[in-house]
Amino acid sequence: MPQDTNDGYWVGFDLGGTKQLAAVYNGDYECLGRDRKKTKGYLGVESGVARIIETIQNALKVANIPASQIRAIGVGCPGPVNPDKGILLDTPNLGWKKVNLKEILEKEFKCSVTVANDVDCGVYGEYRFGDHKKSRSLMGVFPGTGIGAGFIYEGRIFRGHGISCMELGHTRVLPGGPLSGFGHEGSLEAVAGRLAIAGASVQAAYRGQAPTLMELCKTDLADVRSGSLADAIKKGDKAIEQIVYKAGHDIGISLAGMIHVLAPEIIILGGGLVTAMPDLFQNSIQAGIDSWLLPAYKDVAKLKIAKLGDDATVMGAAAWARHVMSTAEIS
Image (cartoon, rainbow, N blue to C red; front, side, top):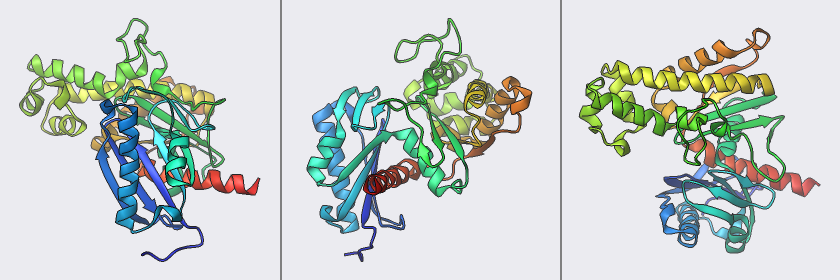
């Protein structure tokens, strides 16, 4: 069994819309064991929660650490959560509503559990482990199926009254525009999210404007992934490059508004789309910011690419659970 540390062991869990990851860390945040599974939210809450428990138990087995030595578990969840009570309020990709995950997991593992939004955890992970700890304020944006954002201010996750916040993807950017999954007209998610990019790309392929993407995916929307978009662009599909650039530009305009409101020192970009096409997204988002930003705010925020990849949320969840627990112990 690994040697115990004064700080004990900590578990981070990332409940993604399509995959979930559990990881066990020692006090120095060295990963001792992990397990990954497909989320399978369609199984329903009871089966889905059982899968969460199984994934955590498997990670503990890999680490060869009994659950009794875990000091806290941090969980990052998609969608709005009540971070005070640890309740998943609405997870649109899973169809879960008002699930008290904190209560369930504390009963199962007999330790403290902290529940937060997954993007909040990801941004906190980048803050703690991505060389940004000296920043007074750090904003993160993770374009994907949705467009999530998180904000760290003076070392803490910024949140609302009884609910997580920074739902950037659900702000309205195009009156009369396409509907989001929630039926909102012209939201940023509906205009610049992964499904919007994939839909426009499939149309381009069907019209003969993206021969490489047609070869890779035909016109099957489900097959249009971040990697296939990146491959199509590398092989000369200019139409796909223009579609992705426009999405990034639209995100940048929205971020200019957030800079006017919050004036973050750094904005980091993460998620699968950005990881697959970092330069294209950084350039297009920066151009969108520059096109809308008031002159006085020009040099306020530096735009950077996230460093931790898939580990950002799970590491951030573990670190945030440890922070919350240590703060409670002090008070």
